Image 1 (tube, rainbow, N blue to C red):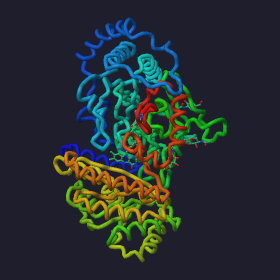
Image 2 (cartoon, helix red, strand yellow):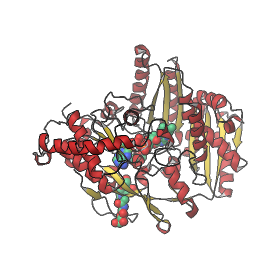
Image 3 (cartoon, helix red, strand yellow):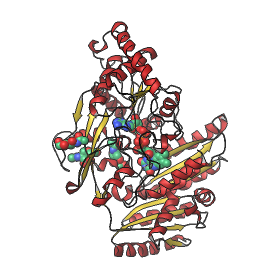
Length: 557
Ligand SMILES: Cc1cc2nc3c(=O)[nH]c(=O)nc-3n(C[C@H](O)[C@H](O)[C@H](O)COP(=O)(O)OP(=O)(O)OC[C@H]3O[C@@H](n4cnc5c(N)ncnc54)[C@H](O)[C@@H]3O)c2cc1C
Ligand SMILES: *[C@@H]1O[C@H](CO)[C@@H](O)[C@H](O)[C@H]1NC(C)=O
Ligand SMILES: *[C@@H]1O[C@H](CO)[C@@H](O)[C@H](O)[C@H]1NC(C)=O
Ligand SMILES: *[C@@H]1O[C@H](CO)[C@@H](O)[C@H](O)[C@H]1NC(C)=O
C-alpha cells in the first residue's frame, strides 16, 4: 500500500464515524475509482471491447457448433460428479455474455482486473486459479442472462462486491466468470416513512448513509468502509455497531435473487414482519454467493441517535481490559460499541496513525474504545457508570471526548488500526487475520491465552476485537516462504479455533467461511449438518455453479 493510498484510507476511516452523521468517502468518486480497486481495477478498455465484439460473434458460433446443447443435458443427480467447462468453453461463454449484454463496459479480460478479482491481500486463503473474465451487469435482467449462459456452458459464477472479505470468499478455485456488482449501485427506492430503503447490491454503505442522513436514518452495519451491500448481505457482516444494532441478518427485509439457472425470485414482501412460509431471506444472508446472486436488497434503517460520544481507557494487561469489557456488558449499560486494541496496535497508532490521531500520545497498553449513543443526558450518566464499573480493574487515564472533533479523532484511532498495520508491515510478510467469537464469560480467558501464544511466535501478532459481542480478531504478519514460521502461525490459529469451540464459541464471528475456514466449519457443526447444507445447495444449484468450493467442498472431493 502506498503512503498516498494509506492516507486516503485513513481519511475514509475518519469520515465513516458510523453514527450516521458524517459519512463520505473522499475517494469514492465514481465507478472504477472506489479506493479498494483503484490500484488495479479499471474499466475494460475500448480496444478490448471492440475485439470482444468481433470475437463475441465467433464465440457464439463456436458455442452453437462445438459445445453441444448443455441446457438440454440431463439434470445432474444427487451423486453425479460435478464437471465444469474447459477454459476454452469458459471463454466462449464470456464472449457470448459480452455479445448478449452488448455494452462497451460489460466485460473485462484485463490481467490486472482479473488479478484484483482473484487474489486478496486481506486473505490468507489463496488459490492459483483465476476467473477467465470479469463481467459487470447493470440490472437484475442482465444478471439473469449471465446466469443462463454460464449455466448452459457449465461455467462457475463467482459474485464480487468490493472484495474486502478476508477468508478468500470471492476467489475462483475452479476458475469461471467473476460477476462484479459495482455498476449496480443505485438506490432504487427510499421510504423514510417506513424506515426502509431498496438498493442494488453495489451500493457502498458509507455512500448510502451519506445519501439518506437528511432523513435522520442510517444503516448501522459498519464493516470495511469500501464494502457493498450485496457482499455485506452475503457474509452476514457486522462491525463495531453490532453490539447495539446486531448483524446484517437483522436488517434485511427482503431480497431479489438470481438463481444459478437464471430464474429470478423475491424472498418476500416489504413489511417488517411476516410469518408467511419459510424464511428464504435468511437462506441467502450469509450464504457467500453459493446459493444465488443478490440483485436487490430491502434494508431496514435505524434512526440516527440524538447524540453520541466516545471514551478511551487503557489497562495494564489484556486480561484486565477484557475482564473490564465483560463487566461493562453484563451491567446492561447500553453502549453503541465496545472495542479492544492491544499494546501493539496502540504502538502502531502512535507511530504511524494519521496526523489527527497522532495529536494525542496514546498509552501503549491494551485499550478499550467505547462509543455511547442516545440522549445527551443518558450519555453523561452512562459514562460515569462505566467509570465506576471499571475501577476494580486498575484503569489508566480515562479520556472522553469533549467536542465533536475530539470524538471523531478518538474513534478514528480504532478505525484506522487495521489499514495502518497492513501498510507498515515488513517487506516480504503477509497478513494472517482471523476471528472467533465465544460466550462472554470466556472472553477474557481466550484473549489472554491467544495473546500469550501469539507472543511466542516472534512475529508481529496483534489482538483487536469487537469485544462488545464476544468477538475478537488476531492479525499476524508472517513470511509465506518460511515454511516453519508458516506452520507455527497456522498451528496458533487452529489452536485458537479449537479453543473457541471448546468454549462453545464459533470459528467465525463475522468473516464467514470462504475458502479459509472450511475445515473449521466441519469441526464446529459436524458432517451431518454440512450434508444438509450441501443438499440445500444441490436443490437450488444442481450443477454446483455458484461460487463453488466455498463454505464446504464439492461433493465428490
Ligand atoms: C479493513 C477491513 C475491516 C473490516 N471490518 C469488518 C468488520 O468490522 N465486520 C465485518 O463483518 N467484516 C469486516 N471486514 C470484512 C468485509 O468488509 C466484510 O466481509 C464485507 O461484508 C464484505 O463486503 P464486500 O462488498 O467487500 O464483499 P466481497 O468481499 O466482494 O464478497 C464477499 C462474499 O459475498 C459474495 N457476494 C458479493 N456480492 C454478492 C452478491 N451480490 N450476491 C451474492 N453474493 C455476493 C462473494 O462471492 C463473497 O463470497 C473488514 C475487512 C477489511 C478489509
Ligand atoms: C420487497 O417486496 C416489495 C413488495 O413486494 C417489493 O416492492 C420490493 O421490490 C421487494 N424488494 C426486493 C429487494 O425484492
Ligand atoms: C427472516 O430472515 C431475515 C434475514 O435473516 C430476518 O431479518 C427476518 O427477521 C426473518 N423473519 C422472520 C419472520 O423470521
Ligand atoms: C448471522 O449472524 C447472527 C449473529 O451472529 C447469527 O445469529 C445468525 O445465525 C447469522 N446468520 C447467518 C445466516 O449466518
